[in-house]
Image 1 (cartoon, rainbow, N blue to C red):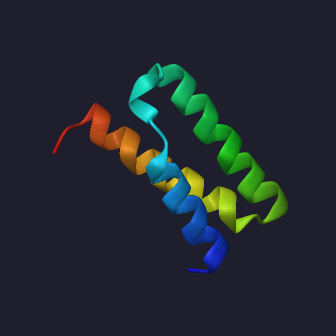
Image 2: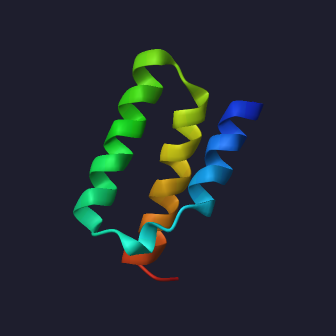
Length: 62
């Protein structure tokens, strides 16, 4: 993992995803994934990965 990916991963962890409706969260994650794929942007790849993990924990509690 590179520095940009880790920064995106951490920034997503700091965001309050639980304040948003799930539909909006999924739309945001889709945009992050699109930006990561389109530009090869590691920052957005990290954001998308961590956001998905946090949302899954919210939907399916451990």
